[in-house]
Length: 506
Image 1 (cartoon, rainbow, N blue to C red):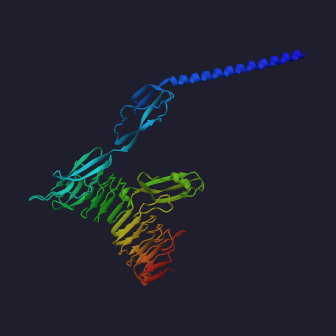
Image 2: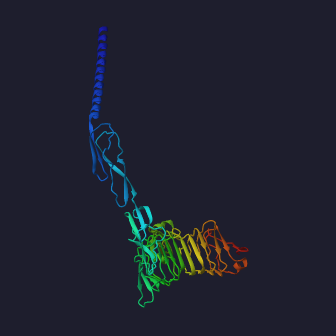
Image 3: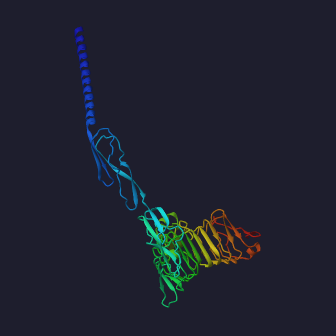
């Protein structure tokens, strides 16, 4: 029995030793195979392709060893100027890493607007000014001393522009000053049928940034600017209309998109439709007198009529914003009139009215004389999602009255300056205006009549001053609620600061 037990133990030990040997053999085999596989990878070579932005192969490197860092050995990749952009090599995509397989790298470029040199010369070839780094697409603007040409025994010369005509910059360019000797400034003029006056048909050779129209030519007045006369004159930054001009035709300055200042020196009896249509950069208007609403210079009224199938929806709530007329690029939508009508069955709500657009750039308005018309720069009530861009209003000493709703809704941010000759401020003239904190208004001693709700501002944070005495202010005819906004958040003017003390409003 004992021998049998020893025999079984011996067999078990032999079995265990055999298993260990087999495992050792397998592990040894695996390690040998893995090591061999790695050696195969390390010994293998790969192809690295270098490609330009457009797919053109710049260089092909073969037999690149596993794990080595590839390098591009040809000339630095380039990309030609395109549409005014200058391109600079900016590296490779993907980022360069040690080689583990075939790979393609593509050249990457950064871009910047190309720039050019503009040279301004006088008539005799002498250099007046050199502007460097003028960006592609910009319209060059001369900011040096005015070119001159000596007077001769026969002629006095007037600078009228540049040759060639100024255009968007796409290359290095020279411009030479040109002159006229007949007083026309190069403008294209036409004598009237009765031979009494001239009309301006177009710019002719004139291409200066400031258009100062002469009052006469050949001893006859220049009275008219024809329709479309200065259409698309991108060189214009400023226009000054002399007091000889009586008529400006429709769309006279249409799409002068660089124009930022417009001034009239006299009464213009006949102003055509939207003479500044498309002039999206106008910042300031200085008018000798104002006989029409400001929007008519830029746009005509457009009608809107909307139906919303939501019973009881409040007009101009956030739900309606998406349905209202939209701002367009460079302009703000201004509501001129609004109305809300609830349908008889109360199943829908109709919102209708009119709107126009003002340039978003329009910040300052100055009117020097005359009566300000009703609704001059009006923004309709209940349209808080839109506002006038105007920040500053200046009325001259020769302005006599301010019409109904003239500036209602304008959120003046800088100031309102009233001239010393104003006699009447009609009802709702400054209704719903919202000045900033610290802002103050000075009423002139010439005032005789203040209309209802005319000074009903939306802000409590301003002071009302009067240049006359307490007794003079007391004598002014003050209409009902002249000093009170109907909303709780609006103003209630209780004190007026006069030259000799405070007037308490009862």
